[in-house]
Image (cartoon, rainbow, N blue to C red; front, side, top):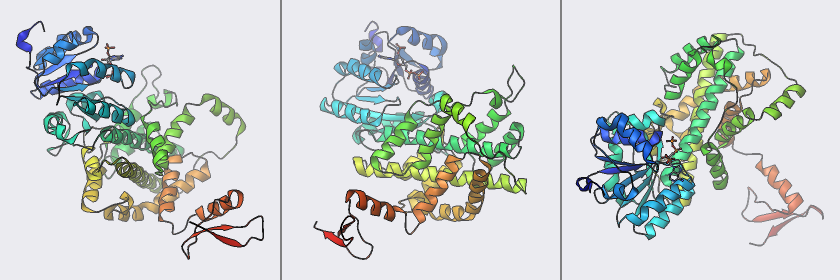
Length: 482
Ligand code: ATR
């Protein structure tokens, strides 16, 4: 280290001075922590010092050795580098310089299975590895994100107080808590993103329905702003209103009308669905949201289908105001179902991976700082804390409101279907609601068919045991030995 006075002075260090990393480091410095900063290429570190060096107590380093030496022990390092090989490369660069008990936090969007692998590797080296989901985008990183750390619980004692201080606060409570061991934090962040996809899909469907009855973008902006005053109060509804109101400088048209209707994605929604499939958790609304983006980004498919397929066009409603209110209720119901599916995925994963996850706490730390922050999350977290819920849908206040809103929801799905307005999210959520409450499902016939063509056997409703019908014989039933 060139400057000995810097050795052992920093409370925490951040590696990776791109947008998220530099903003998180500034957040730490703003909160009074002496913050060591390092980037693979020094130019970025220098830029941060030039532009923001006076905002707090930063300790910049040009080499990784200097950076590590500048930290107090046990060393606390947050990596904010590109997920994937860059994260492994950074870990490999840092670990030879670390000592027993040091804590390495991965604040990137890593896949939770990678986090599990890395945590196990560092545990063998007597180092603490924490996979920390961080949501809130660049503003969140700077002003207070929602933080989902997972890893060895003992290390939370050393890193938790700093993370809680830089996280968003909801009515004085930090939006950060220890989630569970190894990959639990990144898993919860992944599902957060899956729910975010569903939230945005539902908002998109609501807007399409409003458009279908002749509502203009400006009027829709007012409607969403109005919805944001009630049960739907959330960051995404708030910014929907702003996006809808925006005009394109070049054409003067509403911006939403000139944006190409092809939604991109970075993959966390896909992971949420893949993992739901692996765990056998029916997260169909989240899946529909991912597939909807895929449809939007399939120009060839859409071009051919557009040329080939016919269907109705335009919604007919007798009472416009009533229908707008129906859409608001349908949006709320669908949103609740997406949260129910996402939280169910977290609950089941907790059992599968031995994480002992507190679902109420997950909802609690999403109340501020993150993209899906919403008034509803306070209620969800209280419901999980007060009741031993298997599904959010059985929570007393939720089931009552679903019961009260479902006529609207059904009307919206029916009208949209008749009118040819695609609403995969709303209708999938409604089918889920009807499936999970059904006393009997069509699975009986499915099982009968499986037994017919593949001797896959079936169980009976009236007695224990496993049975098979001799379909190609005399069609009598035989009991299969266990
Ligand atoms: P953000 O989304 O915040 O803009 P990101 O793309 O997730 O950023 O991560 C970029 C960071 O990862 C940068 O700090 C980058 O270092 P450079 O500025 O030197 O490019 C870092 N990074 C990318 N690839 C890396 C690698 N192979 N090894 C180490 N760091 C790497």
